[in-house]
Image 1 (cartoon, one colour):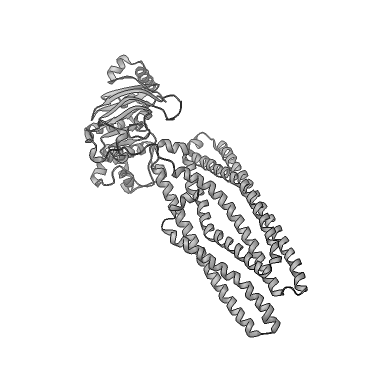
Image 2 (cartoon, rainbow, N blue to C red):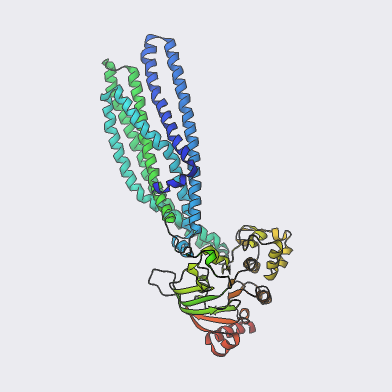
Length: 578
């Protein structure tokens, strides 16, 4: 899993190679120190040679400074590499998500994607930083210290050859137990993030229905699940510490007992025993560091698996084979040819749309009406390929939309979605999302056409007014008009409005529709609306029911023959009269 992420090391590969070399130098300096101390004890002190003691002490000081310098530089470089790798990986995942279709995002869920970009990447980033230091330092220290210990006294080194395999077995058992638990832990983080995200997005609904208590209970459940999962992991990690300490203390006691007997018997010098014990500590500490690193590695593998799921996912909607030069002129002719659609493309669920045949001419004003859940939004979402058809074909200017490059296709279409979204920034910046190279005059005209200019200029800062996240500092109707202005600024061949004037009054709605005729004369306009007054002037009105077009015609024609349309009209007229 981790190997697949190596390309994201990017421009930090040189530092990633230098850091292990610094760790090896640090280990070499640390390994030399006990031998010089042994010489001071066995030679300098025994012979009372002060010059020899100062000489050895000076060498030890130089080695200690060298070790400290290598350690500090290694830590610095490892941190730089880890942070850089994390930044590259986050960017890679984010860029991948930008290529996802709506269906791909639905598959993962936005909360899970956020967890993977943040929490999962952080875990792997920590692992990279640790690996460059501990996973180099610990094995080198373990092997080198064991070799030196054997060279000092092979008989005493047998203690380590017994202790180390026991520790390795214990670490292996703990890793196998923790691997599954780490996967569960990341899923619990997903669930908690999902609960928080849903609550914050819908906070106004929560307060309107006085459901704070329910939401607190739901959060408590997700939070408790995460707490239990974390404790399950921590308990097993904590179990490693007493195992390590028992092994360390047992090995030290055995060495002191056996080595002490050899010193008393004159078979071993006291300085050698002292340095041997130091090497024993270095060996066991290396095993402990390896154990902790492998546990972190276990979690990182679980996170890497989740990240690779995203990175290896091929977007379900990709660019078509045609180049911009091969495409016809943008006129705005839209055709549906026997279109079927269901959200579960490979599943056995029922179609949301069935047998849709429709031809919309350039510059035509088409309205779509129908009850809730009849497939109105699904119908228009197929034109810019937010989803792909399950059967049949959607054509724009005579070319199947699946043959268009996505960027070129969506440049020809202006879309005002059912959920009006404004971004943090100024009104100007939000409008220029429609067309970044638009002039000031074009932006002002688009705002006027969408009936947004007056309220924008009523703000002290006008078009430089800052929008709060999600546009919460403007009303629903103002937000809708800004979104319409943003789409109109694009001068698209096809303009789609998905119930995007529901929050404005009927007079403003009429002015906006009039501006379409006057300022977007050559643009094909497709509008989904709940109010009959918003669609009465349309060239044709489509009536959808149960995913099928049940009738089509002008307002007068439908009033004369379409029962569904008559019911919608009558219900609204009764509401007005009341």
